[in-house]
Image (cartoon, rainbow, N blue to C red; front, side, top):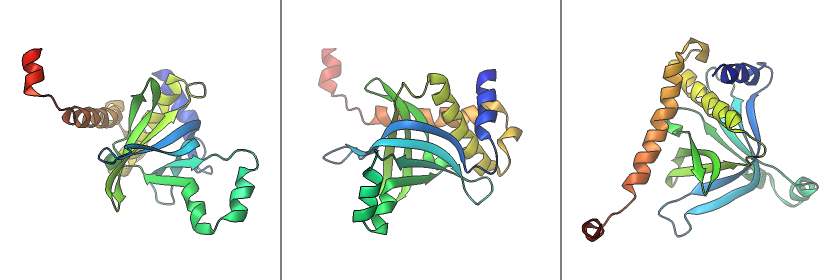
Length: 195
């Protein structure tokens, strides 16, 4: 745990840098469980970072599309400014985000919800390339998001929080994700009788 604290101090870094922590390689998916296509790839190559806002104790979880060499100039020359906004997704970090680590088809990543959409709540998954982010790095990132959520709720620096309070934020989000997953499983009485 001392390694995570040291990494956290290193990551939190200078107030001059708006990005607190960045995972440099992954894939962003949008999840609509009730839709015909439940899991849609939004950015096949993306970065995930925690960014400071201009408001004290408020941070954003930001996913940015990463362009391949030459692709950014090609995109900029043929699109209007509105399309440029689609290269980044930003989410205010708070308890309502329900940010938690996840594993999808043996790949590690993070899951969260955006309840600020016209279509109701939309879920997102960011699957990290394991080669670029170790378990320790992923754990430190999840803890950094929990610290940001704690700061927003408490309106104080995370250094004033008990470690258990911050860990409880992650545990609550993980429990809610598990409950949601279990509630979606339908078991037929005939299956139970057969078992």
